[in-house]
Length: 391
Image (tube, rainbow, N blue to C red):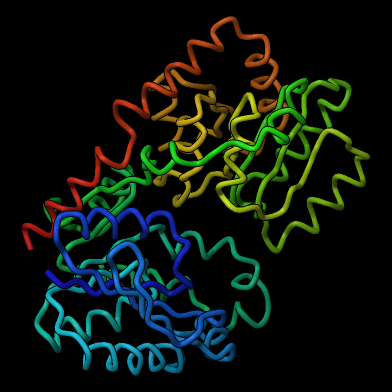
């Protein structure tokens, strides 16, 4: 099949999309990916056997995306872009990554009488509630969570296949939207071990932290991810000079984290900013514990973060907040500890338990074995391949 994938960002990077493309190309499918962002240039390039069509997006159009359910500018940009793509190729299916362009993707699905696969990386209406630009003026006048929920309900029913991240998400959608369970395919954010094994370690980073008990967080540093809880825990542990916190990543809320670090006069926290993944793995390798401290909400309760499996792949026990999906996995595989989301005292207690835990090696081995035997990309890519065989 020739499959049109649609992604509202620059590509690469996007770990999930990269893995899906590789798996589908390997079994003979032809992938054309249409992507656009303000940092794109108009160009067509080859990437791992796929054709990537990039389109420059004017920044004004990009900013209008927040109000796309009210104003037509963003959807019209994509309609024009995809019309041009369809004049060049004949497709057998449309594979949309995430919710916003579902209306546009469905229009092309109907026009060309081809299946529409909706691949939801997140629960968009639930996560939007946490965005500052949605809660504050003028976004709170333009963006309606109610309208996004109605939009979500409409287009998950109109999609021919729905891809979700976890079985918890599947159960949530089945209970809320009265869907046929056969329509939903669960494809989790498991790691590609073949890719990870090709990344070399930076000995300078490994040596820098070899005398420290490093607790690492990697990813989006927004406060909804529980990063403020990390700072609070670091403050409570400031007398434990061997314990060092690494926060790797960035967000618009980094200023708040830096102010709190200065306010508490913390020397045991390091904000590295954004680093490429092939460098981040050395920080993970140098650590003793991987953190997933997300605050609880419907989205975090029903998703997995890439970072959880990346920590496990490098034999790191985890300390996770009690968001349902990650709590269930950690307890099932006995590869870490769970603390109450947002509770810095409980996080501190779990870090100290882990530091002194005689079963640390057992937890580390369990994490690694779980990745090798269960939570790797090869174990789920067959689900994606089977989906297209069925179509």
